[in-house]
Image (cartoon, rainbow, N blue to C red; front, side, top):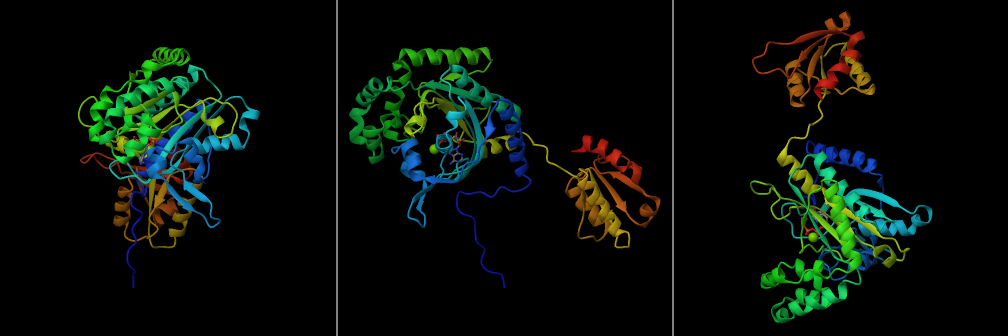
Length: 435
Ligand code: ATP
Ligand code: MG
């Protein structure tokens, strides 16, 4: 008797073949490109002490205020499933005294993040980020290096029309005057604000610029912009960033309204947003595929040394959706499919398939056996490039008759005789043309 079905947890997706190959394609490009840019991979635990996110992301943010998966473990410690990767990376950087052994550190990570959000297209409760962090340089060259890494990554993955939005939030000396102006601007609206917005007004006024509340939209549009309040140092830094980006041919749009949803950012902030030149975005309102910026205070605030840093995080779920809607990522397929018969030579056929696989070729067969026609259907289902039946005659002749499975509809049959001795050489050539 079969029991009732159990569904997966809402907002958490299974990633299955064949779409998983889009994920692997993206991850493969990331590994090689990030490596060439000097970024080494790190893997930190899925969970951290809750305190880490409260102190870094900030208490009055959507993430910490509403979205965290927090629970007490059996030792009654408050544990949180990581909602983002920057704070865990900084925690590890500090904990392992990395700054003592190297003055400059570049890391990247990829893995699942958890946020209890209202689901919609491109917004999930378990989602995947690919992120990078660079510690140790105050120079605009460091900001531009990570931005350039993102821009090149989108190019290599094959998603055009992602537009770089750029802003600067200044530093500690910029904030007081700006916050005063911002508070004065929103003060007349306190009456009509929700409790959430009131809290933001009191304790984290910049968050209001991100608010979706109807009553605030007009005021958000006319709010003072932090870019007009930059101190000399931040202004020079931002000019340097823009000059270098221009030098590298990386286009950008200055976005005076861009404030990011985490507290730790200083100076440069940026997002890459999918904005197709024609037509609607398949991502709808979830068009931001990457967010990042500089965070010069975070490492110190988490108990580490004074180390400036810049980083970003990309949403891989959104990128995969986008890529699948734009083009077909090549799926892997067998070069050769071997058909077998229910006779004494079947063992030899199976041994040949395994040997070829172990030597590095993508070769398939049907472990159910059965009618040759059915096996051939299976071969075409898995998109094998070539098919060969291995029976008594082939076994005796030590030669396979190999059929081309990828002919145009009305093309004449193409069949090759390939001896067992020549099989490896032939597969080497065939696998180049077929995968
Ligand atoms: P948003 O404004 O869309 O909520 P955010 O500012 O909360 O984004 P970040 O914390 O900057 O997002 O995360 C970086 C990237 O991770 C986002 O640009 C997005 O691509 C992706 N991302 C964030 N939250 C989710 C989610 N719930 N589901 C899928 N992807 C997400
Ligand atoms: Mg969010």
